[in-house]
Amino acid sequence: MTRDKNPRLVALLSGPDRRGIVASLAGWIYEHGGNIIHADQHRDREEEIFFQRIEWDSSSGRLQEEAASFGTFAAGNGMRATVALPGHVPTIAILVSRFPHCLHDLVLRWKTGEFRCRIACVVSNHEDLRADCERFGIRFHHIPVDPGTKNEAESRALALFQEEGVELVVLARYMQILSAEFLERVGCPVMNIHHSFLPAFVGTRPYHQAHARGVKLIGATAHYATAILDDGPIVHQDVVRVSHRHDVSDLIRKGRDLEKIVLSQAVAWQLEHRILIYGRKTVVFD
Image 1 (cartoon, rainbow, N blue to C red):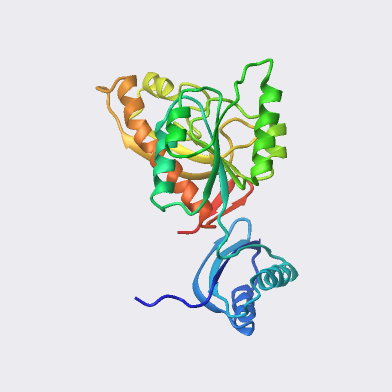
Image 2: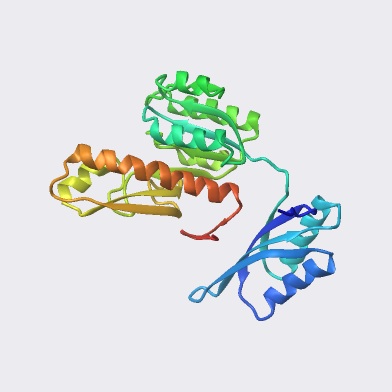
């Protein structure tokens, strides 16, 4: 099997749709010695917004300069662009409470090389998962949270994340509501897994809510956390069928399988530079 000799850049772009934008961007890459390996695009017809993800092999030898120059060119064409450099390993942090299934799934995928990232630390408001994290060689920080210390607890977590240069925070069943101030100050995306098919059954005890309503499908939703509870842009969802024969414990058991798979897929897309947010929506390039 042959391997590409040149490093690869990945760009995500969005902006007003206009005639010739694809040709213009491709032309810039060609003129700078690049070779497009993959390109995908989407047009929101209602909003008239254009989205694109482009991967190209670079031959310039000056990757940071090329990425900056491409961003400037895109801006000149009315587009917002972010460019991921090859070799960069994103740093993530995980927030978790007592439920281990999502944490275990994330860590095992990371350990087996499925996730190309560095897990800087796990922060929890309980001690339950310390031994698990230490077994995997991951730093564990216990930061208790109660109504009187919530601001202090969030400040401690923020200090840790800033010290580690965290670029993504993953809420792996972290059973606390993050403040608007935390989300504003953290300086990176915060991805959450909610154990229902949003927008149905927001808030606490969604499996109990679903059982009381007699639904025939339950789901899990990975979304970006915002100041409004369970209302952020949705990244990924999946469902499983249930019936009148299933009690709440059955729904919880079935739902946990969904939760870990949905969250891990969303994290993978984030690490692979595949998600664009606009308004309350996302575009996810496969």
